Amino acid sequence: DTGVSQDPRHKITKRGQNVTFRCDPISEHNRLYWYRQTLGQGPEFLTYFQNEAQLEKSRLLSDRFSAERPKGSFSTLEIQRTEQGDSAMYLCASSRRPQGASTDTQYFGPGTRLTVL
Amino acid sequence: AQSVAQPEDQVNVAEGNPLTVKCTYSVSGNPYLFWYVQYPNRGLQFLLKYITGDNLVKGSYGFEAEFNKSQTSFHLKKPSALVSDSALYFCAVRGSGGSYIPTFGRGTSLIVHP
Image (cartoon, rainbow over all chains, first blue to last red; front, top):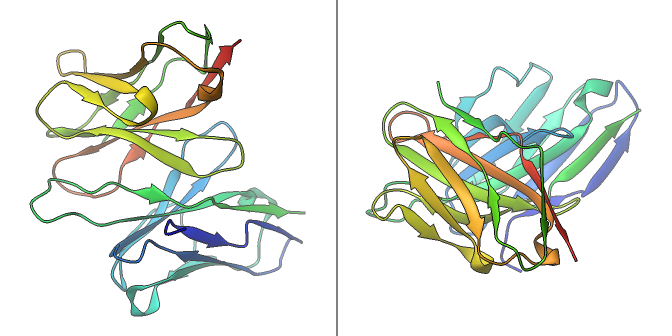
């Protein structure tokens, strides 16, 4: 399978613990996005990388959240001191804008479902 | 600022009947519009997009969408619904300038009855 992969698929943690999620994008994609999705809502943007550079961060991304994309390949999203309000599905997407195209298309991974007890 | 409205939380249709899932948008500049489908406990799957050109866009699994600039709408359609089409459908928009980040609607649950 050459799609976007995420690990783990499910994570249950206790409030106050740190968690880290991993995303492996489609291999030729230079852009990588993190979103959060709660029940009954569409994906909400968290942050975006082009290659290894983090180019945009949402105001939703509190200082407890940090994301990295070393070497422009896989990415990690860490949440420190988790709170019950962090319970959500965390989605990763990747894209590449073909030469001459007006825009890219994001392809999503299966998500990591986080439950904070 | 850009925004998307999906006015129906749920759409019910009988198998074999045509379906429409509605989406309206607001954006600065020319719109880039997308439809995604999400099955339970899965990520979003890309269905189709409108960039420019023909107002009727054809996508995966027999879906199509009609771009209407004057009504700022991008409704998703299918001539004959299948039970397996039952899922959550998300419309997304981004403007032609500025951020690469699309804004997603809240989603519409499509239920196709046998």
